Image 1: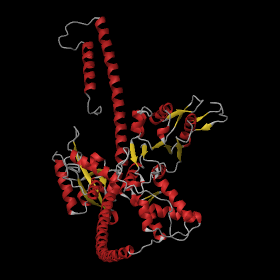
Image 2: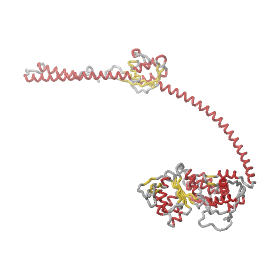
Image 3: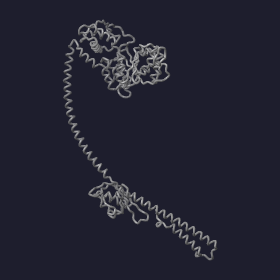
Image 4: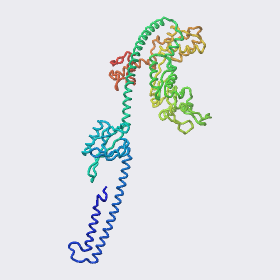
Length: 582
C-alpha cells in the first residue's frame, strides 16, 4: 500500500484544475479577448468550490490510508516479534538487518548486537556454513532454494539444530532487495532421533544375546528329546513284553477292567468299536453348532445318552437339557406339556403351567420317540422350528423361544412319511444332521467293556465283590443278538450279579447265538456302519475320479478334512485309485 508522498497524483490533478479555474476567473487564459459576464464568473467560482471540496475529501482519504498502513505495520511487527519461529532479515551478503525475539533466543544475543553482523558468524560447523552459503547464493540470485538443516552456536556453548528456509523480497520503491529467512528449532527432534538410534542399537544387542541363549537352549532341548525318544523306545519294548504276559492270564482283574472302561468312556457312552467311534466323530462335529439333530436307532441303543453328550459339548451346556418322551404322554396332553397352558384352558387346568419350550429357553429340548407325535401337533412343532414362537393353550400372546432341538426315533421315519403318519416337511426340518446309533450286535467288541462297566456299578449297589468274568461267558454274551441292545445287556448283568455267589460272574440266562442260526437278517436290519462307511467312501472316490483334496475332491464331497478321509481310507484298506465298489 502506497502513502500520500508515494502517490501525489490525486493532489496534483486537483491543484491543476484549481489553477485553471483561477486563470479563467482572472481572465489570464490564452485567447481571452473579452471580459466575462457575471454568470460566467459565478460559474467559475462554483467550479472552484467543487474542486476545493474534492481536494479536502482526497486529503481525508489519504489520512485514513496512512493510519491503516501504520496499524498494519504495527500488527506485522508484533506477529514478527512474537512468532515461535525464529525469523531473520538479511541483505544479499547475509548481513543481519532485523531479527525477532525467537531468533534472539536461538543465538543467545540481543537484536542491537546482532544487527549489522554476518549470520555466518553464528553457524557452528563447516557443513552448516556450506548449507547457509548455498541457500544465500540461490535466494540472492532470485532462484528457488531448497531448505536445509544447519547447526547454530548459542550462548554458553550450546548448539541448536534448525531447519533453514528463505525467500527473496523486493519492494517496488526499495533500492535493494532483502532476504527473509525462517529457522525452525529441530533440536528436540534430533535429540529424540539420537536416543531412538541408541535404543535401536541396544535392542539389537539384546536380541543378539537372546538369540544366542535360545540357540543354546534349543541344542539342549534337542538332546533331551533324543534321550526321551530313546527312553520311549525302551518303554515300548517293555510294553510289548507286558502284553505278552497279559495274554497268559485267564482271569481279568476288575480294577484294571474299570480303568480300561474309563479310557473308552465318552461321557456315559461305553465302547471303542469303529461303529461307535464314528458316532463319537459325528457328535464332536455337530455339538458346537445349533443345528437340529435327529437320532435314529433301535430301542435300547442309548439315544438319550447321545443327546446328553451333544448337549454337554454345546455352547448351551450351562442351560438345561429338557426331555419330552412323546410316547409316554397321552395325545391330548403333549401339546400342553410342550407349549404350556393358561388357567382354565381346558377342563382340569386349574393353574397356569409353563411348557417345556419355555423351560428349555436358551438350552436344549430332547424330543424322544418323535415318531409317536400326533399329526395335528406336528404342524405346531414345525412352526416353532421355523419361526421360534408359539402360544400357550388358552392364551393369544405369542412367546419367543431360543431352543436347540434334538429328536430321536426308533421308527424308520421315511416309511412313516410314505404311510402318511409323519409330515414330510417336519421330517426334513428335523433331519438336518442325522446320527444312526448302531445296535449292540454290530459292535460286539464293546460288550466286554460294557460288562465290566455294569459289573462295577452293581458291585457297589449290591455290595458284592465279583472280580472276574470267564472267557466262555464273554463269548456267549458276544454271540447273542441282543434285540433289546444295551438296555437288555444291563438287565442281564444285574440279574447275574444278584444270583452270583463268589468272585466269578455266573450268568444263568441261556442265549441263542444269532451268528450260528444261518437265518438271513430281517428286511429292516441296518448294515454295519463300517460297511456303510466303506461303500460311501468308494462311491465318493468314484464320483471324483479318485481325487481326495480340492473343491472337487472326495473330502469336500463328504464334508471331511482331507487328513481325516485318508485315515479312514487306511482303516478300510482303500486306495485313492480305487474306482469300483466291491
